[in-house]
Length: 433
Image (cartoon, rainbow, N blue to C red):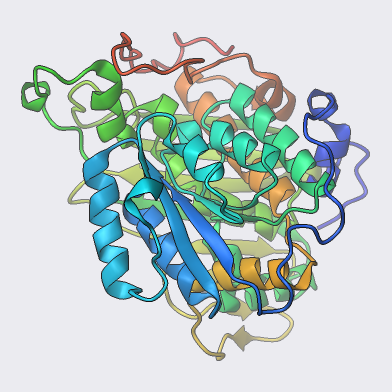
């Protein structure tokens, strides 16, 4: 790809060029090495925040990453979810799960109690609407972090994440993102070859995320009479934009991230999109399909198709068109390149979920920490930008997305609060804020 355009902005420049991130940050920088274990002799204590399926998986992978790691604290909004996760982890890691009853925290403030419990590393795996709040608290407290994707559901929250990323760098804290494909061996080798020019200049990238619904919204009649608005929405979090970001931001963000990866993490200039809701959603407010077109410098295009409707064609693939060839990753098959030299990945299969934790804890041990903050925030904002374009039917520039004042996440939470469901967006009527 020709990168000579004056308006080209790389993701590496993102934190430098965003005036919104330049505010003073609260906590002082730590002394070098203050939070690092000595080689593998010191025990690293892990706290899990968010005990659903992804959180339980992340905790298991963390415990497998190093022989001297223990899980000492867990927190979730709901007791039933925490206990189910704890029992599962105890069966799988009997010798490494050291979570006593007084370190099981339940409620809306459970995240802070986990952070304050004496852990060294926190795993953030709650619904993403809460992620910016939890990340800020963890970094303020000087903890190393595994941060599941996406990192925010609206632009104001994303700007908070940017500040937390900057603070983590200043404190020399590890921050590893849950965009797991970046830690998968075959794709690492594939994109390295693409970046080295195996298919010439990149002209277009097409990524698909066509699958079924993750968690359909139950009928309103199934809601217990005593259950408040907040609990109802949190227990069905995937169906609410403020909590999930919509299926495009929460699920297809992996495909969005790989588009960014393919073009060396360049910032898109603008996006247009189509989308809507084809199947009834019983009170939720998310779309079930979108198609987003990103424009990058030098007329390069990125296309992301997302659909989450049952009984439809499924595909999760990546197609990269270059000036001298073509690259393809068809589902879970080995990546291939047809270009100056044909190539097919023949190396070992690797567990990307495990790899990201292996690298996180290895970096903590070494003192040379990983910080995925810049590209993880860019990929998240690319997702939010695409959703904004689909919801409004407007062309959305990168600057409009970054500076948007549309605030979806409430400032305060209370189990008794009234929390109206946002009407579903209507392209052409829903305004760009």
